Length: 413
Image 1 (cartoon, one colour):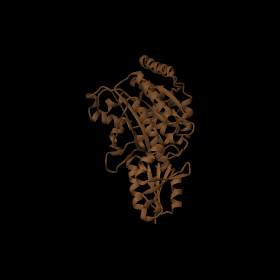
Image 2: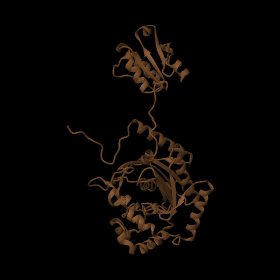
Image 3: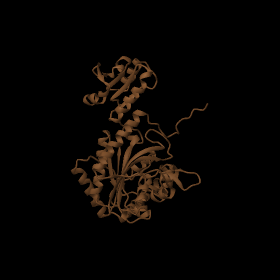
């Protein structure tokens, strides 16, 4: 008989990994709420055109990485920003308030070649702040990202920042890149040869070693930036400096999505191989308008949860039991089950054996589950309306009245 396996590029989370995932996302939620962000939940299915228009038709994602439902203009979302802006426009939120701070946690899907740190289904913690072009908001978002990664226990990391300038500056940069790279076209990979004609900026984001060497030979400066954009970026770096945020200013950083303008940033780690970005983001001041909404500036980022998990030691996050219920015979199972549920109703983490093990086997199971106490129901004691309460840490045991089980445990835990 055929044995089924998980789809290539997806991963199962066992109880330990699920516990780590829950712990990470809860820590992120706590930090995001402190910064005034509100959680939203959006569908994983979106119209294909949303991403063709939002991300750009020349991006890797839209060209070959989207999972499309056959016969439909429907795809599994490859990223979260375009969906949030669709939500913002569809529900006319701009008519209700001038400024929103959203976050979301959930799966994304891309048909990439699977490797370490690159999956076809993966989870993002995403942040979008819509309605302000304040450079202090750029600083807040970057500071927030670094605080989240600190909270999650990520130690090996480097923040990289750059500015693409406004739409006019970005257009000027494209022209400079085309002029500088057209004579070096033969030293580019096939994808970048094609990209050079459509969108030269995309060449800067290529991970192929040949293209990276070619790009490194360029001498990019800030000559393409207008005065306002250059001053704003200098102000951002000054704010980061004043808050002690360490960063590297890299003029070659562009990010892989076409909607970015002005501030762009990513956080990398040396511990996860070639797919070294664990979080990234930037400004997308023209995206809302391009998708049919008002001319509203915005900024955001996304953290790759699975990539963060690769950086952490797998400490056992499985829930330990407060109490394990054991019984010496099948006759006592009904009473044991009743006590078990009374304990759960009282707020204790409690469980029992469902495999008809011997008392010795049940005690081993309790120890394996990390139970703090074990309540033992035995024939003679049960006749006297008492049970044994075993302290697994002290290896001591006392008799207590059955009616006092909850009260006794509350005094001890």
